[in-house]
Amino acid sequence: MTGTVGIIGGNDKQLEPWLRAAGLRVIHLRADELSSPVRGVGAIPDVVLVDLRSERNLLGVIPNIKRHYPSMGIAIICSSLDPALMLEGMRAGVNECVAEPITQEGVESAISRLLQQATPTEGRVFAVVGELPILKLCDQGLFDVAARRHLTTIVEEEDGE
Image 1: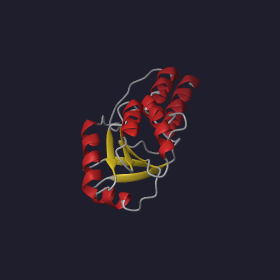
Image 2: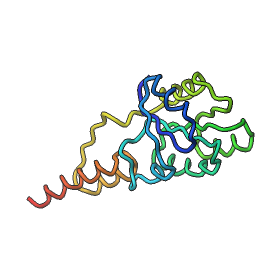
Image 3: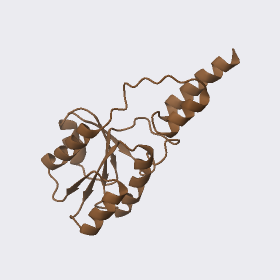
């Protein structure tokens, strides 16, 4: 498997080694880092794994992530398959659920299914004219903050010539 997995919440020391052993890049994110593309993150993960076992309220950030990154796959880790939590998760935009006891195979299977459905965000070419289309693409989450600053600088330099 190849791809980047963002982990939000939790402090399970097994997750990162399991994901790295599967060939995945792992980044740890704060709950608010993907909820707004204006704030942006250094790298936008292909999928997000939200650990709800210690912080169930993290489920509330998922709708914001899905609003800005609609094709991003999201999996949750929970203590049990509580029907109310499953319904709330589906409404929020959760694609996969891994319940305790978690296993390496269970986590890898969920991430693998999400990666198969993911729309790649790298390797896209966009041709834009002017600053407004660039800002719209940034607002849709197609560029991170560093790319936005770079593209805006290029436009400003061209306007100044």
